[in-house]
Length: 347
Image 1 (cartoon, rainbow, N blue to C red):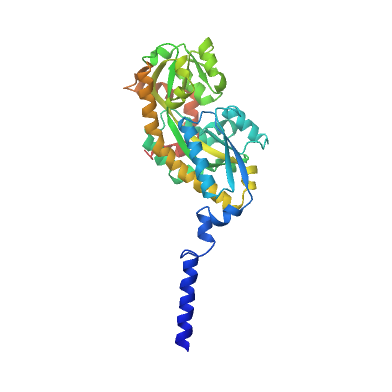
Image 2 (cartoon, rainbow, N blue to C red):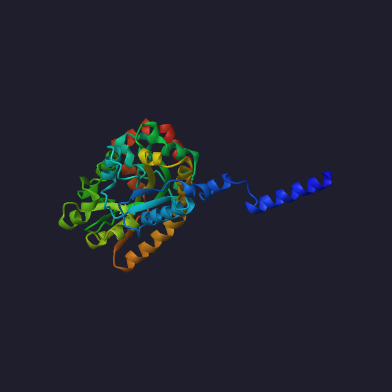
């Protein structure tokens, strides 16, 4: 009799495991973003992107949307508002930090929060910090990166970092030829209102000119400014070659980016949905790493084929030397020398 009962219990256990896919019910489904999380209250998150969807950051936004919606089983919808329809990065951040809850998420430059007291992020904006994409990704995939992403919470900003990405190195472009560092002297170069950017432009002998990104095309066309700087993909997608068809590949700063979510939006989510956002962020970060170089190479070849005057910089020494002399840059390094050295050591 005992043998019969034991055999019966064993058979029932096998049938139970088969019915639930051979896994414990509940937990694994939640971890994969399906199952119970699909039955969580439905939430739509508005995601701001200043660039078009065909750019590297635009494609990254689309990938994040796909990952979140699949992994949440449809309980989270990402509503991407691209091409700057919600304003510039600073407009969006001003709104978020000012308490506007109509924007839930945004892709921003990794150093955009420096204007709001995020001192660690300043180090990501310093020219010639990252020697290569590999150097950047060594940082972005390190424990140190998590420390930077968490900084907004540490300084009581109402948002948190989700993941990092990049859109290629940033280069200068102008409405007249730039063949060397000397050609920048006297130019009015568009900058965002950032002390590091202002200091870099001044150190190159140029005049920093604050212009909103949405007004840059017109400013270049009318002579309000002579030059600007952007990653290659954004330079082309925003039609800047039409008004400034001279590009010099100095690669002064890596176009590091991050995606942030507001505390208000975070609080709308269940714990399982919060986990989906972070896991989708990890997947999207990897997607961005695999996408960026190839996309940039294709855009650069197209620019050359279209007649853009592209000049390479074989010796960046003079550029690095000039930038390192800027007081704002020296001060930023000295203030967090140990942390900055940790970044440099990751190359």
